[in-house]
Length: 378
Image 1: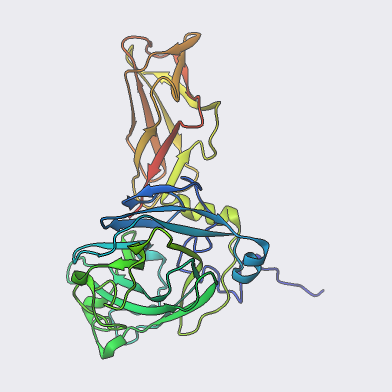
Image 2: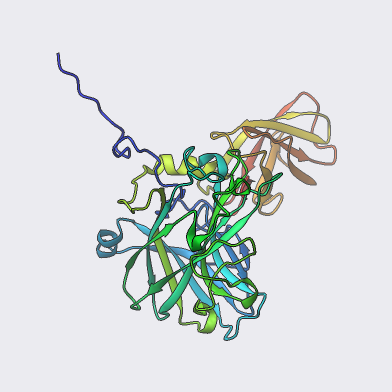
């Protein structure tokens, strides 16, 4: 009897998870899909952090692609960055970037950094701008600096040729770029643990303090070249990014297609929120009375997080989230996410004598503005 081996649909030539960028196709947006103005944080799309330090301002939001753009890029969504406040002259110590941090133990075991066998990596992506063309930069930061290891940086230029047009770019990252031996020497190694191993930064504007030589590894912080355009010079400027892939080898291959539920689980290693989908009527878990002032519950997380997360209640106490006990909602005086581990957290709800020991109640989220966030990002 003949047998046929059936592979999962996202496994291509047994090279599953070849893309070291999580959510490079911009599928997952746990925090928000709407425009958020920020100077630096994870605010919209998962795994992509804004770092804005200029005299202007930017916003981040989801761009749902047209059928034609989906056919071009192979993606349904793009990350859209808008200049919402102009800065015509970037100061020497200022910068604007999009950051993607890669956990060290997710890097290929045969990457070989820190040895003469270090291998190439290839970055590929789709980019579009509305008005700004010219030289942009991507920088890579070999981040592991524990013990005898050293952090190294390399900026690499690419060109946006035409405004209003999706352009596909590929960049080969050589461990000996610029005829250097920093990555192939022992301090260039990366310890494969849950710390930060490699960071990929898309630069939009950069001050002279952080510019360096194109495609050359350096031990100083070099995040762009002096040719980098100033995206912040006009509020007409918009920057679209999607289909980002970083893979082992010196050639770009088609973007890896990861199912939505798998991509979500990968993102939840770094950020989770409860409820996952905003709801105006949601009960987390039954509460148990510790004493007259405290009721608690412990929640097992659906995905093990990178490290013990930092938790927070979001919203207004007694409005967006409430504690139900003894036939009604009780007035809360405080709340806390406590005793966190990488796979479980405890919620403590505080009152002024409204509860009772060894009695039960419930934690409710009462509006779409209320939620509990758990963060293990870099």
